[in-house]
Image 1 (cartoon, rainbow, N blue to C red):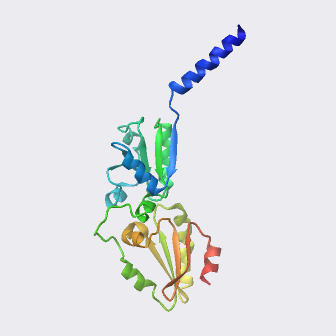
Image 2: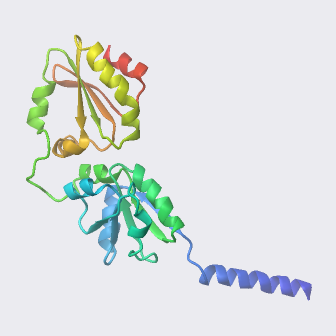
Image 3: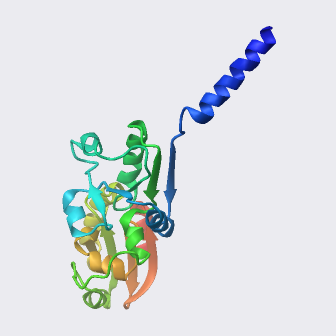
Length: 232
């Protein structure tokens, strides 16, 4: 009798697990898969968690903007359907990762995050073609790095945490090493055309040129010590 009761309890639990609840699912997928998932989803919910200024300059078609760094992120997601897939992205993946965790806490069941953010989306050629030039052109950039001295170009963004850590010593090196190397800092958000043309999809990204040719390239954080070694 006792065995039968335990057996029935196990069966009941299994039934409820299979039919009573839907397990949460979140995935981080690359730009191509993200695009294909959106295309295969009727009336997709696409959430851009960047700032309104970033959103207005460039965003995925049909996306809605709820700023992760704003004060009303939770309220801004209330109109979204928690039972349907939601596609989340930011600039490079940092903010969207935090937003995904919050969305799961709020009860969203199927959350897809764009790996590498809209930088990867643009680099994959998925953005709508545009004749609008934002910031420096590739032609201007090539003139900038064509020098007898070494030229170090640092692509950064104000919201990028590793970029912020590197800013103090890069700006210091601009002065200290001025005789031997020209160090240029370019804001990625103000040079979108150049970012797309050069297929730069991660921040920070640093390039070292000698006689207009790339001699070294690095994406991601690099210490002052290592950076100085590369320049020498």
